[in-house]
Image (cartoon, rainbow, N blue to C red; front, side):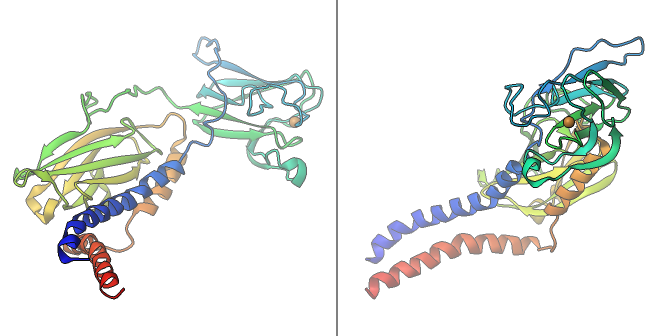
Amino acid sequence: METGKFFLFSPALFLLSIIVITISTNSWFYYNKASNNDNYSYYHIAYAAANADANGIKSFNVTIPKGSANPQVDITKLGPRQWYLPRQITVGVNDTITWTNNDTEAHTVTSGNGAGIESLVNNKRGTPNGVFDSGSFKPGQSWTHTFTKPGTYTYFCTIHPWMDGVVIVQGKAQNIPNYPAYASGARISKLPVYKFTTDGKIEAGLSWDPNVLLTGKEISFFVTFFDLANNKPNLLPYDFVLVQGGKQLQRIPSITQAGMNIQHHVFSNSGSISIRIENVGAVKSSDIQFDTIVFDNPTISSAAANQLAAAANKQSSNPFTVSYSTLVYIEYAVIIGIPAAVAVFVVFAYRYR
Ligand SMILES: [Cu+2]
């Protein structure tokens, strides 16, 4: 290939390599998101209309329909099959649920994990966890239980371990908004929010998904930088810092990919938080602070939120630290290195063919 032609070709390679780098670094985010799906999203959710008594306590009903003992029969025609109706029910703290056996065989309501439909073949029995257990109750009989603690409780039948259900107990009522909010609770009219570095040279943008932050739920923060002096998005090093209750939760030395970067965090506690973008371009005076608020997740217990947070944040913490300049060098080395290697290969391939 003539030298002139090659140089016409090289900007395309350069562009391609930037695209490859951006996609590869950000695809991990989508992978994480996909693997974090709610296990119970496919259940038929019932917010059963129940009347409250004088103390505001409600009574709910779950039935065990006729034919539940026979796993071959799709009795409810609801797909997925349900042996407790409804299979998932959401109640409040101190509410009661009564399970009524309308089948022709005895059943149990036992907290823990069932053994799935495969238990018909593999003879597994399921694993009780001791939170509650009705024991066996006969056709026409019922069993009532009061749920005093918020949380997600899975249960099954010890006689027919493929039969399973879940009870979600919600904690005290909170005023969870349906919009992003400042630490004060005031509405953030639009995301991303923008702020300038103290030296006025860089404009940082921050948005997050989901917009309403709940404990135990992975939040993705999108950081963008715009370099006003050069009038373009910028590849810049910075520290992503999360502070809650005066305590630093997380500090991740990072670098924006083509002007944008994604950070993840799972919060274990509710309350206001500060999202700090520090040392932008390694300049100490460039810190920016955004404020918002985390709410208690009504669908999980605080213990579950703690566990989820511990597992998720451990994954994202960096086992080794790299200086800002090293990060910049690595980034540029990859951007320049890949097209350079391809170029050398192309030149040699044409010269020695
Ligand atoms: Cu049963």
